Image (cartoon, rainbow, N blue to C red; front, side):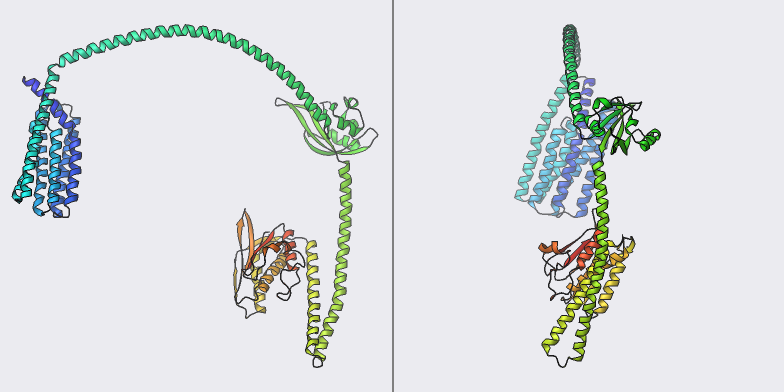
Length: 613
């Protein structure tokens, strides 16, 4: 083979080896870290780290060499220099790998020596596959990789080490034979390719021309087929279009007939609705004349429907309505007016009037819907009369309640006074039973007086006019509880009040409500060694909910319906004193503020009263 052909074969071989450089780089990095991981506990760290650093550095140099080769546009003019440079790099890399064999002198672990041998053998086998294209390059790597390990095994001198040295030597010979075979195959393939390069190029050109001709013929055949298909398609389209036009005409005729029938049915349907409507309906044209009137408006005015058509709307208005009609510029809306019937009868009505439109265009034609409110007017008068009578009755009841309370209070005061005199002047002459009887009479009279006061308060609340303002509820609660503590200074009480509770409410009424709720909390926790009362709030559905919580005796929730009714007590008077009117008073105050009040409790586990304002 001449010099030029040899250089071309060499160029192909160098190009192949440089393309396989990334594989060798990956194998170097992976196996280097395998060696580091397995020997880090047996070999001094500084030695192992230096070896790993040099190995990685030269691996990175090889990648840099690969990158320079890729971007070099004159790479095939420098083939021999590239071959020598790469051979030098591989020789250095082989020396570094061979140096790892000397790590065996730092330990006597046979498994670890075998792992190093296995890694070096793997690197050698990989080089036979990757670098065998160039014989010199392959041997520059494989000899410095395997020879140090064989020497180390021989120096260690054990029978196992000597056996491994022999196997390693045999392994090197075998993979060298394999590498030599690969080298011959690759070289012969490249030589064969270069020797027949002109023939291959000629065959490629012939194949390209033949393919071009075949494509041209296929294109011509396709164009002929498309032309034929286009003609057939045009014929079919013309036939289909004519058929569609015919079908469309039939469909249009059917639709026109269907729409006409639907319009007739719709007109009959809506006319029946209008004619049977309980509201009077009329249509007023731009000259204020009636162009349509349904049966109900005709009945309302006392005319036949035909008589109303064409009449001026002013004929059915009284004198005040006629004046208003002349000045009213509204074209739509709801008005209350008086219509005049056939016999001059005044009919109070509500008229809802609007302009008729056609496809978005407003006309001066007005549609009016008339509601006869004669009966409603009668009901309104009856309601006014009933309200007046109710106010009179309430006033009489108020006077009666004040009179009765005064008439009852006087004898109660007499009974209470005489019971006191009997206790003072005849205490020594009365036995224990008589004194108890006097105490019962006196307590009963006091309880009746409290009931009367509570009932008067309850009745006054219903008539009190609300005067709302922003009130500090926390301050009111603190004042009430301080007053209760002053009355019972020896009770152990824990009180928690949120300092920022305020609301828009009547100050007098809300104080009565809080006094009743807090007095109840104080009263019903009286038997507890430790009293706990808290006043706070939270938000639910954008509403502020206030609550008073205590650890009182509690109650069964099945009786919650009785809770806010007058005189409905859930505990006996022997357990807790009271009139049974306090919560009814609270309920009425909260309702007067348009609020809600409810409670949650369990017997023996305390109660919580919630309210909104």
